[in-house]
Length: 245
Length: 227
Image (tube, rainbow over all chains, first blue to last red; front, side, top):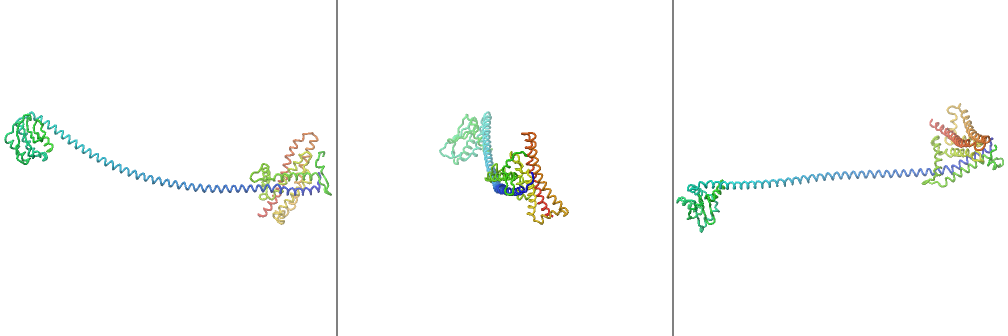
C-alpha cells in the first residue's frame, strides 16, 4: 500500500478528533466519577476516623469512670472492713466482759455451793460423831456419867442464844428437869441458879428422874426441850460443838 | 489482493481529496469508539457502579497507572493522547479480523500519520512544560557535537515507529491471505489467532514507545532543572 498524502492528512485530523471525542466522552466522565468516588471514600474514611476518635474518647471516658468506680468500691470496702473490724472488736469485748461476769458469777455460786456443801458435810459429820459418841457412851451409862453430863449441860446453858431462852422468861411456863439418875441437892441448886439467871428471875424447876434417858438430863420449858442425855443422842451438845468449834 | 473489501464500495472523491478505505475504516472506528464511550458513560453512578462502569473505570485506571509508572506526575496530561493511541491502534489492528474489513494500520499513510503525531507530541509537551529555549537546549546536551545524532535519532525512531506497525500488520494480513490461498478454508485460523495477539502487542508497543519518547523528553527537562 502506497503512501497517500490525503489519507495522511485526514488520518492526522481523524486521530486528533478522536482524541478530543474520547477525552470529552470517555476519559473525563470516567475520571470525574472516579474522583467523586474517591472523594466519597475519603469522606467515608474521614467520618469513620471521626467516629473512631469519638469512640476512643468515649472508651477513655468510660475507662476513667470505671477506674473511679473501682476506686470508690475499694474505699467503700476498706471502710466496711474497718467498720467490721471495729464491730468485731466491740462485740468481742462485750462477749469477753459477759464471759468474765458469768465466770465470776459461776465462781461465786461454786464457792457458795462448796461452802454450803462443806457446812452440810460438817453438820452431817457432827451428827454422825454425836450419834457415835452417844452410842459409845450408852455402854458407859451410869451415875458418874449422868453427873458429868449434868455438869456439862450446866456449863453449856450459858452458850445458848438469847432468843432460845425467851420461854424461860415466860412467868407462866413450867420448867422441868428430868435426869436418868436422881440429881443430888448441889446439882439441883446449880440447875436452879443457872436457869434462874438465864430467865432473869427466881425459878423453881420441877426435878424428876427417868431411866429411859440412860444418862444425862432433859430440860423442858413449855414447848422448848433441851436434850442432854444418851437417849436423845446428846443433841444439845452437838449444837454447842457446832457453835464452839 | 482478491480479498472482498466492503468499504471499497463506499470510497469517494471530494474534489481533489481521495477518501479511501483507510479513512473510511478510521471513521467507522471513530464512530464505534466514540459511540461506545458515549453510551458507556451516560449513566455513571458514584454510589452503585454497574459492571459496565466498573470495566470502564478499570480500563481508564489501568491506562492511567501505566502512564504514571513511566512518566510520574504527568498521567493526567498524557492520558488522552497515549490512551487514545492504545485504544485506537488495538481496535484498528483487530478490525482486520472482521470479514470484509481490513486493518487500517496496514496502511503506511495511517502509521506515518500516527508516528508524526507522536513526534509532534513529544515536542508539544516538552515546549508546553519548559518553553522553547529550555526544550531546544537539551539537543545540545551533553555536547553540541551530539546535535546531529539527536536529530537523526528523532527521525529514525519516528520512521521506525511508523514502519514497525505498518510492516507487522500488513505482513500478518498478507500471510493470512497467502495461507488461505495455498491451504484453503479454515487453514489460516491459527494465524488469525496469532493476529489477535499480534494486534494487541503492536498496539501496546506503539503506545508504550510513544509514552517512553514523551516521558524521555519530560525527564530530560526535569534533569536540566535539577542541574
